[in-house]
Image 1: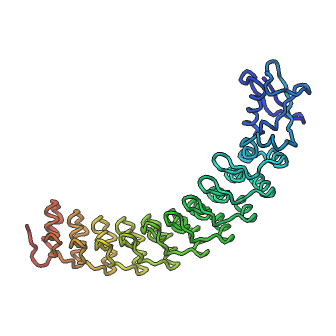
Image 2: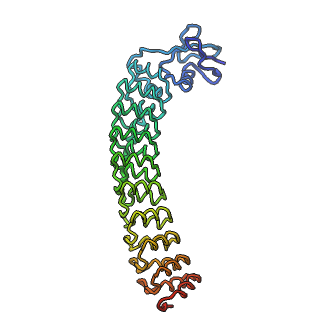
Image 3: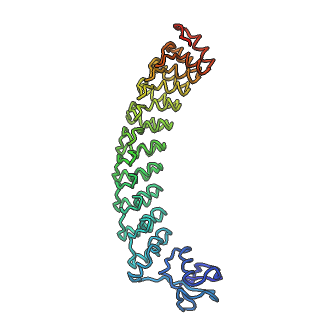
Length: 407
C-alpha cells in the first residue's frame, strides 16, 4: 500500500500502487480524490522530487507538496482542470492558490461554464465569495444562456443568491429560452430566493419564449406563497402567454389549484378572460371537473353563459363530460339551459349523447327544452336512442313537454 502524506504529517491518501503505473497517474488519482490540480502537485520520496514519468514500484511513503507562484504559461497549460475544477469540488485553498498564481477567474470550459457557475451549482459559498472578491464576471452566461444567478436561483442556494445580488448580478438576464432567475426560482417554489430577487428589483413581468411570466409558472406549479410575493412585487395577473392558452388564473384553474385560484381572484384577476379557443377559467374547470373551483368562480361572479369559439358554454362542457355537481352549481347559478353551440347542440343533447342520465334529469328539472333540434335536425331523444342509452331515453320520454320527434 502506497501512502501519501502532507507536509504537516497528515495522511492524505492510501492507494494500491499496482493500480497506478507512474507518478503522473498518482497525481491524477489525487486530483480526483482531493481536487488538487496535477500541475500544482509535487511528490517527494525521502526529500527527493519525483518526475512525472517515474515508476512507483518499491515506494511506500510519499510526501505531497503544493506548488505556488506558477508562471502564466504554466497556468494556461493547466486548462480547464485548474480553477474550474477547484470551484466544482469546493477546494477553497486550491482555488485561492490558483487565483494568486494568475488563473483566469472567468475561464469558460467547452460547456461555457465558469468557475463561478460551478461553485454556485455545487453550493460552495466560500469559493463564490473568493471569486467575487477576485473580480469574477458575475453576468457571464453559458451555452444555454444560464448565469451563475440563474443556477443558484434554480437550486435555492440562498446564501449564494444573496452574495451574487450584493455583488450586482443582473436579475434581468434571460437564457436562450427566455427564462430569468426569477422564473427559475418561481417554477421550483423557492420562496426566499424569490423574495431576494424581488428586493433586488427583478422584473416580475418579463416573459420567456413561450410568453410565460414568473407568476404563470408559479400558478401552474401551485406555489401559492411564491405567487403572493410576485403579486406584491408588481406581477401582472392578467397576462396571456404566447400560445394564447394560459393566464395565471386559467392555468391554476385547469390544474385544480383552488388556493392559487382564490389568491388570484382576491388580487383582482379577470375571471372572464378567454384563451385562444375562447375558453374561460370556468369553462376549463367545468370540462375538467374541478367542483370547488367552479363554485368559487361562480361565487366571484364569473360569466356562466359566455361561449367559446365553437359556441360551447361551461354548462355544455360539464354536461358533455358528466360532471353532475358542476352542472347543478351552474344551474343553481342561473346558467342558460337552452343555448346551442355552432352545431346547434345543447347541454341536454351533450348529456344525452354521452349517457349521463343524472345530468339529463337535472337539466330537465331545470326546464331544458328537450325538443330543440341541432343542425342535423337531431333532438336529445334521437341522440340518446342512437347510442342506445335506455335510461336517458326513459328520462326524456317521461319528461313533461311537447311531444318529442322520434326517428
